[in-house]
Length: 289
Image (cartoon, rainbow, N blue to C red):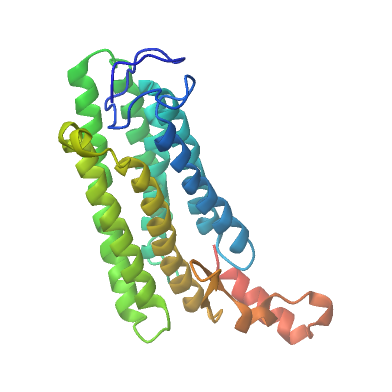
């Protein structure tokens, strides 16, 4: 954070993070924070590609939301213009709302009625409108801080609710290979990144006197990996509930995904299925979203 002014002018964002502005490029306000946002885009695209067939559409929406968070983060950190904060924050809220729906409606039969997803969508819409409305007063420092803490408080509470549900799922899946390790790895990585986020936010001046290690940029890396990993647990749980025999598989040892190889016969072309198998498949599809 400094007084250097680049292509996008003076920063108007609620928070000017600890990275020195326009230090690397005249056109990018926070170069490393912007670059690290690509991790979110990669996580969303990779998840969409690896879970494009045989999984509920709700999870595709989650991966799309992660991708949008990445693009929004690029807009925000690349410019430090206040209205672009919404492109970063609003997709986060919808990602959590979709995930909250997924961990609650994880059985074959619906636990709640149509009112549940409608209520969650309206909550996200109203929250987004509220943020945009407060954005009309972005030149008012107090209003910007009010918006920032409303977002942070809501995001924190929703994250806790989702995380507690994920813990309950992991306990129920304690005998499944790889689920516990995925939970522990994702949680530790998230915690490390969150500690870094707070150090970057609260102790920037002191940290710059020693070494600016771009902790907010590392937060993007850890958040993308941990949020992706915890989402896989919800995908695994839902797939198991639907009898699809999911397995945690890995790409290059470090990139997990949910595979349905043991249940691949459920998705064979109809021309090689018997009529009884086709009827069974249609019954299974009818209970999905």
